[in-house]
Length: 115
Image (tube, rainbow, N blue to C red; front, side, top):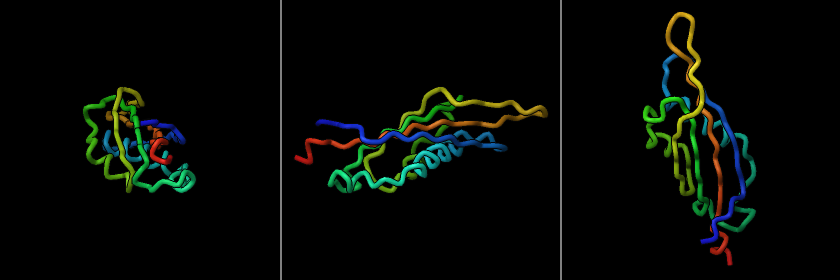
């Protein structure tokens, strides 16, 4: 397989009150996806299902993220999600924290399939 990267988008998401790492991650992925208006699959004469999607999410508590819920965000393609330590937890003066997640979404295609 000649996996070739064609697009990288970045996003940020937050959970301001509930300290919900999964929701912050979902918002970060959506933010990254909303930046993209290019129809990559059509440009390379592929179907949308042919998109190989690698998403990497950074949060302070990676084990608190439900990756299955993140999979549901992608309406097509072959998503693979990796959650790593990153992002930020911002402590509030009267208790609790704001959770910030960062996302990188990489879209690739198997270019050998086009030949």
